[in-house]
Length: 222
Ligand SMILES: *Cc1c(COP(=O)(O)O)cnc(C)c1O
Image 1 (cartoon, helix red, strand yellow):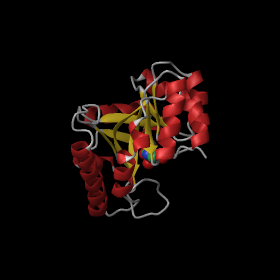
Image 2 (cartoon, helix red, strand yellow; image 1 turned 45 degrees about the horizontal axis):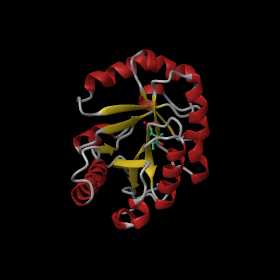
Image 3 (cartoon, protein in one colour; image 1 turned 30 degrees about the vertical axis):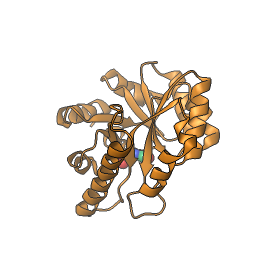
Image 4 (cartoon, protein in one colour; image 1 turned 90 degrees about the vertical axis):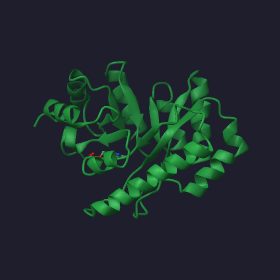
């Protein structure tokens, strides 16, 4: 199946409230252009320099999603154009994003990443850490960032009950934060969860953004 066939299949299958992010990491600009020509506009990358490089080669109306672990010293490369940073897991990082967003006269949308999987290699905060951050005076002064929701990755397993439980947990975190911090903020509305192997479960559990790489572009180039 070609990239366009794969995209068409997703377009037919996805409910209207779920946005597809085509994860193009390791893929060349031509592959992204093929998806773009089918109408796809949201693309996900996990390396700052790779994303910055591709953004200069491709049309300006692409919405670039940064989905990986972001080091503070790399924020400056993506701050001029990034559409949504999915994986914010510390106040330190949020402060740097705020600073770089200010330099570019922008407000950058961010998601808080939560650790919902059993693997210790996956990044993310727990609920206590997030509550502490949202109560911090340092957070309240950040005028160039906007937190628009949460993101998480489930354990890589065939156990679908476990995946469901982990996604349900992320949704609960979202609802808790919505109630306690963002009840007056309609922009706090995104739950980014689900990849090629588990997106159907994620949608059942309330995903609004799914991040799909392999099922669109095929196996990654290494
Ligand atoms: C690579 C990646 C994806 C896409 O994974 P696939 O299994 O190829 O769909 C989604 N989210 C994150 C955070 C990733 O790093």
